[in-house]
Length: 305
Image 1: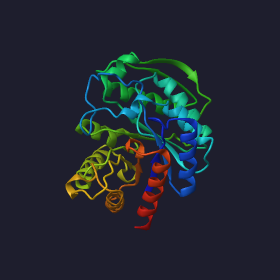
Image 2 (image 1 turned 180 degrees about the vertical axis):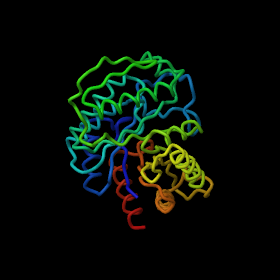
Image 3 (image 1 turned 45 degrees about the horizontal axis):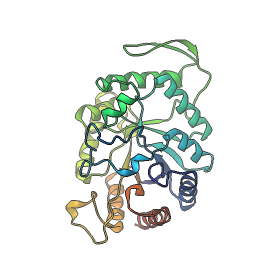
Image 4 (image 1 turned 60 degrees about the vertical axis):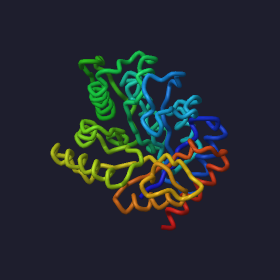
């Protein structure tokens, strides 16, 4: 199983020196990938509760970097690790602009980009970027149509319910052909079916492994029904540790636990068939130096197992 680490693109460490330290030490330590998230607002009174924990949005989100710019910076200071978005809210900009940005980043990183898309959880952000909250699924489908055309055709046009693109030459092509791996963060039955039918894989968040693998089975069955090869799909599992000083009961993992318990969870995930697991220590009350140390101990613990 591949192991990844979230870059500090949220909170007080979202600074050039923070990103630089984490991306360099992660690559040197042996991590396989680096990941960024996506926010445009931190409302005083969000229009919807945060979809985990106690429903309160983490204070770290009040300071947020642009995920693609941050990954471009990380690309210039690394040579080996893959660079992923978890998640990029891909509906907040016109698909043709998104295609250009992703293609540029894949080229500049020498083919190391992994595109993790999500639909977000907060209607306020859609209001801020003048994109309708309703109809997100249809908008996602058409966005994916345009990305695929942009990446695979030298000349293309598009006429859809939401977007019109006149016939154009596209000389810019990604390093990865036919294009970067595109994953989707989704948990509803319809979202899981969409992954199996159209996407390269799944971006779940940590949950009890029997539940996780049961949802993965739904995706694989949908892929078979769509005539796709299920073995080609990939899962990249996000873990947001809430570290405790003493061991928690098994029923609380992976919501909370010691570092050793999260190491055990990662080992079990590998045995269950998870392809990649990446950890985000950014929401732990620790300094950047302490988080770097945690990342090193986590990697050593999982690899040792």
